[in-house]
Image 1 (cartoon, rainbow, N blue to C red):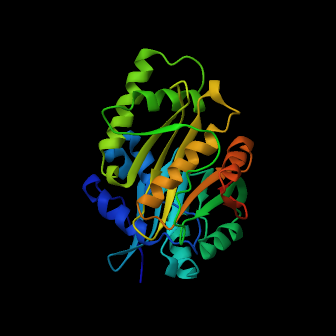
Image 2: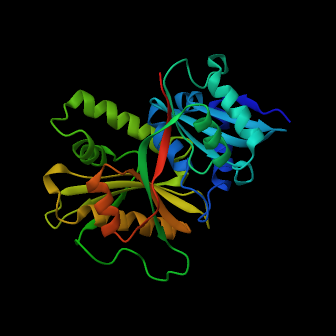
Length: 299
């Protein structure tokens, strides 16, 4: 049966997230997660929907991809990961600019766990590119909250009306430098759009404060439902407060939030080249897995 490739409307985003949630499991790969859609929704529901591609068979989704800058980040129904016929149809759409997935020339895809598709892409001359390290913190059978050791901080959960401090710490962690008022307002407005958007119910937004009540670290964690892996996306420490254990502290707080939401585990993917992030997740008690590689089609 031929696959049908569609781009959902913004009104369909909750259903897309629900379908994607069903593909998350502790025994499976760390692929596209509903939380990735949630964080992407900084750009708004309409743009998020426009960046999605869904492959369906008989009206049932079998694969999804999210255009994130120049990369298509994918997830696949577990029953289709080794299906060569599915892989060939997706490859056909990758190769046809009129299909609306990639234009001609260079392209990059993250297709972790999609074994048949990855094999076909490599046969077609795609090459391994960015390496990512998956991390997992198991929560099944744990009676205690993971938040217990390390730097002592106060954790606050914030909503769409009070995201300014969250945004300032995130900016320092990922951008650095001066945050001028116009840029701050624009980013805070986008953050509020995300926090009120179609994925808002999946998220918890946390800020860590030190003993001087300085906001020192932030994270957002995302649920895929009870009994399924949750996602940490993003996590960052203010540049003025690094090296004091605050990254591990906010990460453990995020894991605790996911546990209270019923998650089976907390997960995160980080670039293998990001030594600070890798050290933070290891210090927070996460177990790393084998590296996964994006695949790139040379120009």
